[in-house]
Length: 82
Image (cartoon, rainbow, N blue to C red; front, side, top):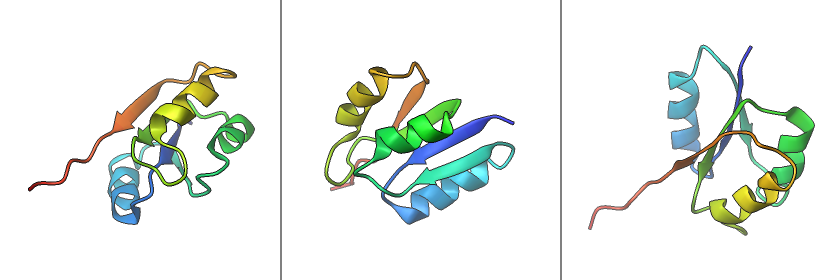
């Protein structure tokens, strides 16, 4: 079954994405200091990555992931309304 990693710090968004992706195996990455290691250990087919993560942003993690994998990455962007 296709495995999708969700790298997102907002639990409500993770829940919504996981619900929408119920036909897939969904793994939520919660340890934002070791994203690359978790992805290497599980080998997902797709990564949904939030850009604004604690510690390091999604662009940093994409650079790190690309050193070892070619897994497709889609960015999740949430913009606050003013």
